[in-house]
Length: 323
Image 1 (cartoon, rainbow, N blue to C red):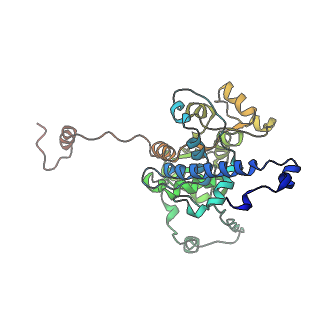
Image 2 (image 1 turned 180 degrees about the vertical axis):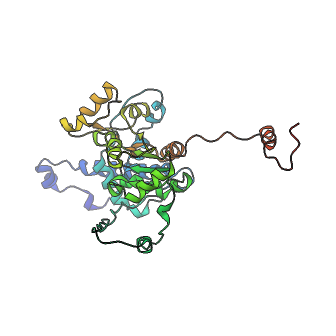
């Protein structure tokens, strides 16, 4: 062994000051274990087919790797466990590894520039239709109906859904609530034009999250035929999925008053205690499947050969006579 590995006589200044050299070894051991867990978690988060995921989703997946029993208990025993890994330790291990070396990890989201305010018309001023349509690269984009829209409380989750092409598969625009609210008047007109449009809201199980659908509903105003639907999370989802939870400051009277009346008393008490759970805690593949299923709606029944033949009788052309 090299001489530099030996302690100086008397134990050295670290020993005389009461500092234990084993602490550095323990920190390196924990960091190395966390780094290996991040590697395994990144592979799991990307399954199947090379999904993209956020840093917070990678954190929760790393917690599941370090707590293998949680996968067995999920769906069998309801509960809201605490994360087995503290977030600062995960961030430190990820910094040491290097974010760019993790395949599938998305960069942090960037807030879009502020939307320019539309100039108000004076009473005598009139704008021609051609000048109105010259705004934007696709002037006819807002001339169609918009049957569904997805608003996400988290900007990073909205970016993750877009990176995995959920907006294309579900034919549903995906926006971050902080960036989109209040909705552009042209988007509101497109929703109303579609007839029976639905605004889906994906939010955390937190006082601000469960109050977000009501906030969206208030910004829309009295639109005919436009529904605002919550996709979750709510505390009952958190318990059934055994998602890791945290605890923050307790909401004040205003926050408690904004909670929806549809919550169960136990859920209200859970939120009143400052508990919360993030959408990022849901495994990425499960989140994508759920969002796609709920935004697209139920699949139409698969046509069989017999149902197809019966349908031909009503076409009236090149089919057998009805009599």
